[in-house]
Length: 60
Image 1 (tube, rainbow, N blue to C red):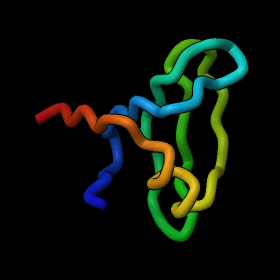
Image 2: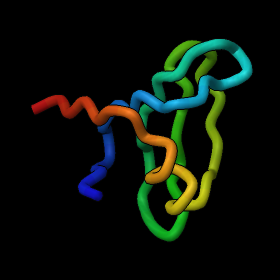
Image 3: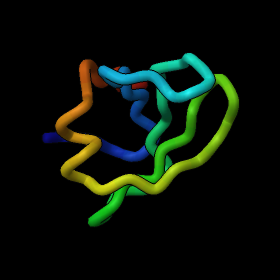
């Protein structure tokens, strides 16, 4: 899956604050993603993120 830093991800499951949009801030074995509503940052395994992505929005 082609995910890059600064991509906006629309996830299948929302964050506990209710928002399902996240910004990718770091990529590696884990993804560091930031909730766009409450700005909470989370480190999540690559496999979990790729499985739960609904849509990728790329700013060009």
